[in-house]
View (cartoon, rainbow, N blue to C red):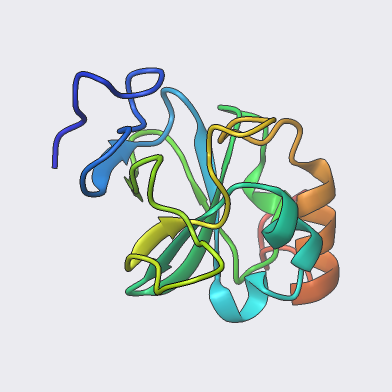
Length: 140
């Protein structure tokens, strides 16, 4: 999986299949199980996120270094510093008709705000309210 020459900002392929991109350079990522992520509908409906069907996860891209693990609920992962994220091409997003690809965007990623959420504070608050407390044993 390599990123093509026509990739947005050097990491988001315009078309084709998904690619593996390392977090920590262009963005970090927040990943939550779909079962938890769907309980924050305002973020699923209005902010581009990556849906992965295997395993069932929803991933939001956030600015590098803006999140501390202690801020996230235990069921939510923080991906940074070279951890891989499978990124679908910009043209792979959920549409009203048809079945989306196994890995796809919830919304077109090159829309109004772009694919990276800044700042993610309201999303983190919504996930904590929906999913529960912060990571156990990790100081805030």
